[in-house]
Image 1 (spheres, rainbow, N blue to C red):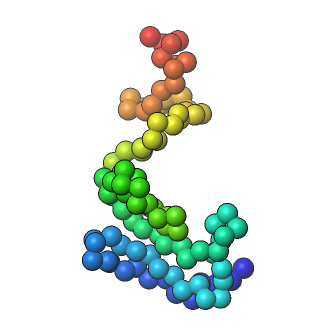
Image 2: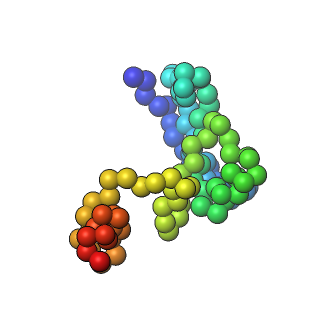
Length: 98
């Protein structure tokens, strides 16, 4: 395994912070394709707009900041039984308790 030479965070003119690394001694591959990988910290609103505009970059990993978890219509599986009043519950829990 190769070591990263350096890691830095750059604030770009578009207000997004980019995490850059010098990987001259190693290669990054995504699905066996070598790529220059960019990590971007971005708001949920900005990420949603990238998706709507079809401008999400294939060589970018987006770290999305939000006050909630967006599942984009996917189901959430294997939810534990609730222990606090604000916990999510399963359909089975609701069916048997209400």
